[in-house]
Image (cartoon, rainbow, N blue to C red):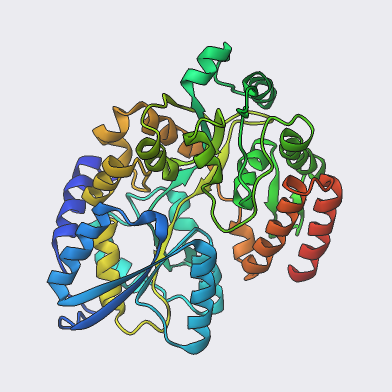
Length: 421
């Protein structure tokens, strides 16, 4: 979530770019190949199989006389498959990634730089001018673009309006108010809140506590340390001390809190627009409320969202780039938002009626400027994979096993110091 030329002009250019199958090449730019028959393989997240993207796939297939093989994975499985592909040299044509992999694979040489295509087509498609700056920064390495943001999202508070009204509780705005609300809402087999076992869901708490995950210059990890410990312990205490949230279940699926919320077994959850569609489809009777990010030392949240990149050994990068242009066009962003409520990276997206006139989407859009990228400094070390593995262990030790936060964080920092040298 954060995710000028005239925005009206960008609307026009974005629509025009989406309508062109493959732009003609110019001097110094890669040449456009003839339509290539066969299969075009895309690795995609299982939760993002939207009709808006299926329409793009159909148009792409007609334009290039290819069959798109959309392979859908949960993120951990996608990463396992992708790393095996890099090792074997047989790679897909295009990859959707969860945020952070683009720079990691740029450093390792497994992602193709897209700067030549950006130099050729960027002005016509509004890139990078119409993308939120954080999305360009997080997908660039050594001055070159390696990926293009598809969604720009953030986490914030979802709440059941009916439950809060019945308990006489106002939507919380601070950590203290959240704890008090959760206590009052926990009763009769219903929890006040549900937390996610996925370690990425700890970052809103960390940024609200003013914690910097890693400083590339000073090499400091999780500082101020006392605030990082307090943020972790606060989350664990919701589960184990105050008992206002259930013990999360380990696994690769991050939908546990959403399912509890949809079943009206939890009154509040922290999540993003990816859970809007499941909630509306499975529990249409819930009065869904969405509140701005909580405030502790600051009111902030985590920048999330996915990007697209082309593996370095992909054999048809021109086709891959054309797919990127089509699926990131403004009219496709609009269709995906109308379909699912997903947030998008274009600045001009914020001005769409679908955003401004929807009270839920507008809360998210307003929160985007407070969103922080939690792993950018780590990505530039080339050690993101090990960082994330250790974070997962540490977070689940604290949240699920109730290991003291100070002890778990000290172990994490010691491990991170070893591989971030």
